[in-house]
Length: 197
Image (cartoon, one colour):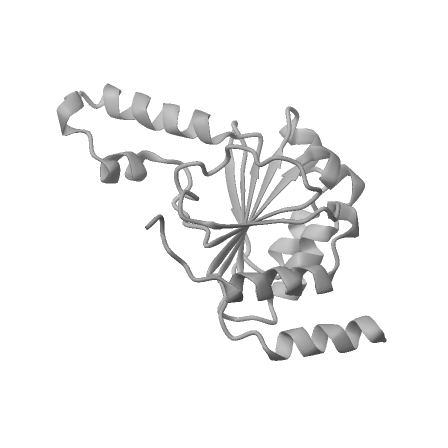
């Protein structure tokens, strides 16, 4: 009861939201509580300004993790894109969109982009930031990156998240509650975005 009141009080004062949020998780997080992804989606639906939720799951075995995510059920509620080193799958329609990226790193993504550009025969002095961005796998720009469990960040979206606001919490993924999510959003609202300046 107290938590619900606290959630209400925080939600009431939220007026500024990120358009894209990224959660960085480990495979241990998902093995411990795969259903939390759907819970975060449910919480996010309350805030129409948030258009996309990105979950990067660091794992050496994407197929094992993919089978735990309840993708068919999620796809009945919104757009879900699942990206692994082997394939890209999109199911469902709706907002906020969910992107689940399994087992890819930012270094690999940038390396692959450069390889694609080189195969196109582009001269080195003709390569631009815009060209690299167009060759990246993920065309996203997370405003807000949340890392649970207090561990270090992965290098996922290392290019796209250069101006993201970062939020670290010692609370593990399995214990991450709606009130913790709201606190993170409140923290985001309190920040002045500087975009690297």
